[in-house]
Length: 179
Image (tube, rainbow, N blue to C red; front, side):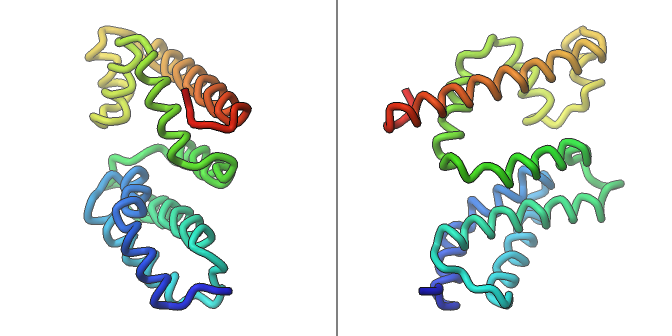
């Protein structure tokens, strides 16, 4: 049974904050993220493919919001403080393969892994990804060389990835929530 237009719109409006947040993570602009959400809703209502259930709709909506965000960044590259195209491509690949675990489990695992990380690692990640500083600015603030920052970020990405995968596989093996 396919979702009707009214049900599609209702489900999207219920998930408006989450879908907009998926776009914001890419574009880092609240107004653009809202525009992207509206485009996603419009496309969902006018597309020729139907959605069998809410999960299919939501998966499509998140992927579409992220792709629209990437397109927005490409159009506004000079104005944007968003992520590099190479990082966006890596994120796109990861988002396409994320169906294996619910997003909530990944977020919990990430939070646990970040809480266990050393303070200097959390500070580095905060400066780079949450405060929006460039790697050069982070190096300056932390009193380190640019190459050292690149290496630390790379190692942090790898250790967080391993930690998250470990927590998700442990949760999957026990069949229960994350420890």
